[in-house]
Image (cartoon, rainbow, N blue to C red; front, side):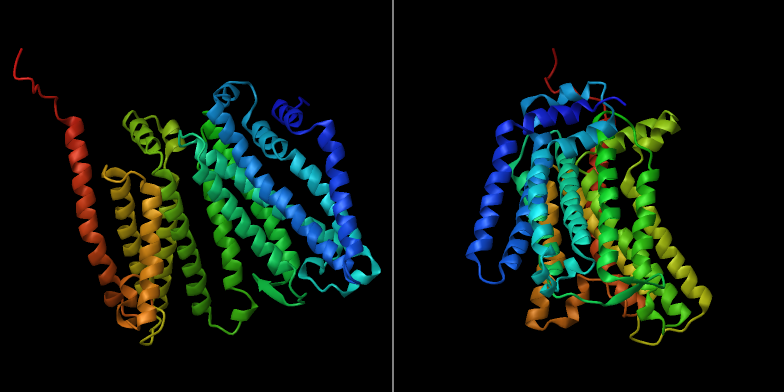
Length: 466
């Protein structure tokens, strides 16, 4: 097996004899002083401290290292040289992920060792954390996968940022740190809460809460790493088939559907379960369509390349450049159509004021059309300097601030002008969103019509002659 040159390079950059010696000594002395200067619950103080030190080093700092190593290389001009080497996409991916974070893992190893010793003492039996519901070994597995998940997210974010042909941005790196901080804070605060023996059902199978979350995190880490690998292939000018994205769509929908048909819904009718399952699948896929559509607008060359291959009847290349958001949107519309077909074929009469599938799907599709028109206008009107952040700001206003103000002022009658209303009659639910979408699409159509005319019109001489 060939050694991974990228991984070895990062080891030489990150590891030195001074670091190898200093890290365990500094951490060991710090934890020893914590243990001795604490009261009778010194083991608890050390356990909490070592856990958070591990997450600060391996998850927080590691995520920043995974992202910034790519961005710094891009700014220094060495990333282009690396892309021209013979290293394949997969060795490059895991070499970047584990090589740039090797020292963070080295420090994290000593924190994990201290954590294991602290929770293994006899007095630690009093700790009733969810983190320790499976024992110290499973607690370490949980700490490790949270760090892996955050680092993979950092690498994925770094690859996304350098794909925009931009230099290192403090805003981009800051966003990675903020998201990582939120992830670590949630996983840390939740799983140091009181231990619970509650079980829940997923597709009718009973699972212990902690074990299910632990397994889910490892599965989502694998998908996160797969996404980074796909982006690395794109950076190395290797085409990606759409099958991986389609597989992720199917997986996410099945994962969420498992909760919809759980034991808590056993008392519901078969019609209720089918409508609930298809509605979850439709809503999840619509959300992913939003995300992919906004992301792919940052690089419109993919859509241009797709139409070029279609025009030249190069179908093999066209499938590689086919926009992923269109696949997701088609999948979402398919789920919505299945929901409507099932509803009307069942001949079920819906009482007034209950969930109506046509109101739900029609309103969501119309709101999606409105938001799609907004995104297209932001990116293609030429009047917005930063269309991505502007779109996110407008969505915060539309879906966050306005509903909050309506709720605070008691204007409940207009609440569903900005939100889908699946409990209203179909016409009442669909019409407000449709009236918002139509004028926006007229505006967008005008913009694209002007661009098309400018592209096909012959150049005119405005110089007034020779």
